[in-house]
Length: 498
Ligand SMILES: Cc1cc2nc3c(=O)[nH]c(=O)nc-3n(C[C@H](O)[C@H](O)[C@H](O)COP(=O)(O)OP(=O)(O)OC[C@H]3O[C@@H](n4cnc5c(N)ncnc54)[C@H](O)[C@@H]3O)c2cc1C
Ligand SMILES: *[C@@H]1O[C@H](CO)[C@@H](O)[C@H](O)[C@H]1NC(C)=O
Ligand SMILES: *[C@@H]1O[C@H](CO)[C@@H](O)[C@H](O)[C@H]1NC(C)=O
Ligand SMILES: CC(=O)N[C@H]1CO[C@H](CO)[C@@H](O)[C@@H]1O
Image (cartoon, rainbow, N blue to C red):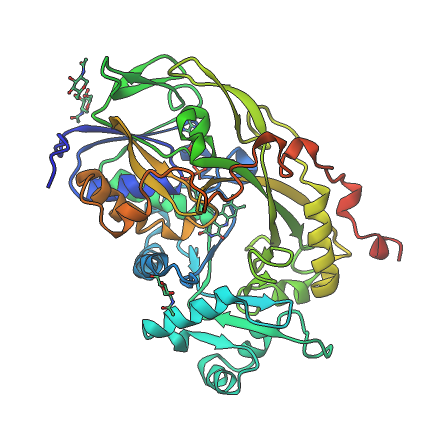
């Protein structure tokens, strides 16, 4: 094993208290590291990661998809299966806690991981190659029985004995396609469901604190403005927005969509892009009991309409406990180019950066007309009961995508004082309990690349994997060239004219 010079007493700074920072902090503390400080510009101790109260990180959200199926990417499949044991244990621990022992924002009845199932529908009438690869690799691991191909006589038979009475009919066909004589093709994944994102982050911050991790959370003292380097170019600490300096033997940069703004050198590997999300607020429960019942996670699955990447790239969730149905569009992820001054070198770079409802200034968010139109088309066809409500809110949720959609967890070349821990690429949340386990291994043994160390190592653009990062500002995904949807576009004309 190569010496990293780190001891369990070494001061370690983590920038960012989203999934990547929290999971790293939790596992470093578990591994015995005693001097860990997490910085975030968000006052999460006060707002409990609430998106209606200032939180705008990708990790702050009502819900995220939890799935173990991963096409040919068996490494992620295995990691997700390892993580699920901890999600189950966390649910139990929260449920057996006394309310006063839980952090603000959590109560014993909260189920942060909900195994409601995931319906992946194909709209072109055939199972996609990714779906087939998923089934093959799950079969290889002895897990085929967790998947149910809709319409397959054997699987349908198995489903009827696996699910509660009536549940299979509702969950496998939530849009009533069979009743309407429409074709229904897809796979129901019984291992999957959703996690309650903001609540899960709140819980893990609580676990971190219990293990001795220190948090500095505020716009001034918690916001890292630049990095301190020694003459050999090694990162030796951070400087905050209030100009305080903190020394560290290792700085872990886990700033999600803000990672390239803080460290522009990474922008050849990572790009910040916007995903589009809309909300439908159901009327109060006593006025619309049928809708609350229909969209309840007991009766309604997480769904991908036409798969996540094909077709419309539209997916949605059962309602939240407050009656919000969230639907997302990832057919196109948008870039937002700005001049960014590297806070450490002073050089200016043209890179894509987040623009949220709260950042850099607060504004009334708008998403593209392309996204709204695609979502409305699916809602009209599949969930007409929502058309009378209309879209009630929207959000741009900022991804940080890598060249190949894999994560990036590695030391910066020629600077072993800085480790980048980012590149969630739209699928990192589910690994909250387990990601840090691998981060610790990568930190402790930087050269002996194990499975995940190799998968997530610093990489360069080559001819194959580019993931749209080569398009740059002149590309078709540039946000500034899109038509933005107005609040009028949020309505469904047909129904409002009734
Ligand atoms: C629309 C959308 C849908 C997604 N859906 C899913 C899904 O269904 N399933 C799934 O598993 N994953 C999903 N993901 C991916 C998942 O949300 C991310 O992989 C994960 O949340 C990223 O965590 P992070 O810690 O890297 O970044 P973030 O959550 O963005 O956290 C970064 C943190 O850094 C802080 N920060 C930024 N700048 C500074 C600074 N200068 N100083 C201090 N702190 C700073 C921010 O305040 C923030 O708290 C989705 C992502 C998006 C955008
Ligand atoms: C952690 O490290 C910092 C920076 O070296 C140091 O000032 C502080 O005293 C250390 N804290 C503990 C508890 O060891
Ligand atoms: C910078 O820090 C590294 C590691 O602590 C050390 O090896 C190197 O000598 C330092 N360089 C200078 C110029 O202080
Ligand atoms: C059928 C099968 O084995 N599919 C894939 C499983 O995952 C590996 C990667 O680890 C692929 O190479 C296989 O093609």
